[in-house]
Image (cartoon, rainbow, N blue to C red; front, side, top):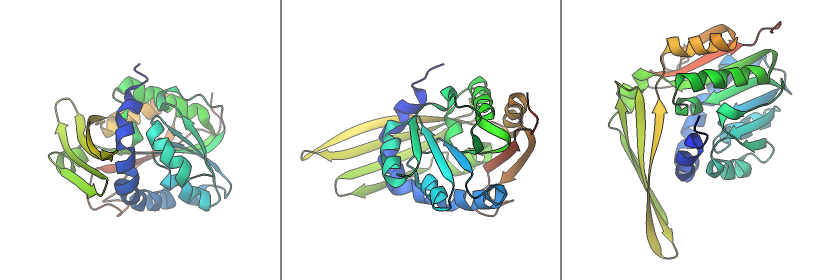
Length: 252
């Protein structure tokens, strides 16, 4: 297992994500949580945000009265998260290596697990999540499926220019390998000199059947699937998918 894969690629993206992407993610994912799991949690429930990114969602959950612990494998992301969600307990760690006792009423993972590049590692993460949950705890995982990558990613270019900072991305998707790439270029003005940084961030596309199989192998039950566009009506494009499942009350 390569323990640096998730962290090394995401550090350059931290400012881009914090400044330009996080709000859009929050506007979709918070309504999904409010529909799918928050009504069934106690007001002081303890939530683990697995792949918490720059912390905007964690802060929203804190404001609702929940206790929040955040994990991210990018120290760059966590620097913003510490500013955005100062009331959260935040840890620098890889999702594949977490080792909490059964502590949490809920675990959420918003987009982070597409960066787990093998089915074996994904299954291992789900085992780790299972171990962290209290009996009857809920796990919500948000993933992009192939429909999203094919129709909303492949060939898409985005960017932004600021006074001291500019970035551009071009996305691609390899349907044979089931791997998507974010090719990122950043220009930063440092001591009156523009410096260029190039980075490639990879994502793995899993099928619904693979995700369900990994969840069942880890021990989860009552697995439900919700398309953010068709079922939840919170996304303009199909392919963004929420899986919701539970740790049994009586588990081994």
